[in-house]
Image 1: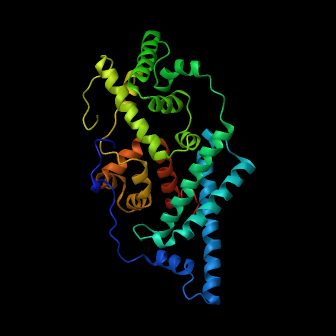
Image 2: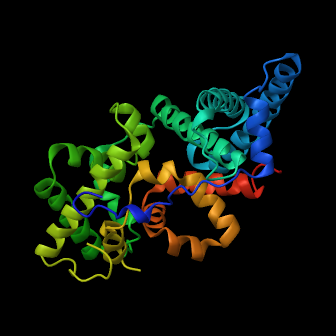
Image 3: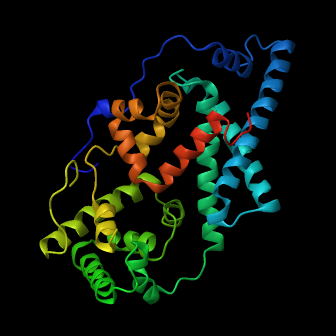
Length: 230
Length: 77
């Protein structure tokens, strides 16, 4: 990230080999090779089977995340159908981009997992709880597990962090940091609200974390040491 | 763990972190590698992706969800 860009080898690099049998069969059926009646029927069957699998994964993923996001019942089922439908459209339109670096089903499930994330972000925006911003700063020590009985420590931590945010961050970094850390807005929801992307918001937060830490180190609150970190 | 220690841990950044875009591009490859070779070997092989998934809540959630789906823990497969 930023000036410390990761080396290319830090990311798995494609080493395309022959497809595994199952992935090859999915590709053959979904691409409807031959385009005859039998090919079309196979494709329809494969699409129906894939949709069923995507729907099952979407439901399970929404259930896994349901407690913190407050989605259940019919709403959960509607979101699961929307995620599976949109994932299926994305998969079929990008079928030629599947390189066989992973199993086909893993590649396909990634689409529905990302759809679930995006839909939960938008769901949060529609149902966001009203935040009391002033009180939120006072709750920051709790966010980092400070002992409420240690009044002096918790007060000092909150004040130092607030000062670092105010003095070291750009306006956009401050807005993003306050929304995510102080107000508790999920990163995906903030990205949707700002018309941005998860990657751009994360990079803003990444830079904000570095600057706040540097500020706290410079003012004697934190040590500068740390292996493999900045 | 004191509040200061937790805050320090949160603020520390890993220069190997590849960011959301690259991590999501290869998430399926990473998850299959974990299933095949185990988490430790995969994290050693792809430290930039591992660093990102540890630091980024949303990408970490997507990783956990995809791993659960693939291993059948979530899908009932």
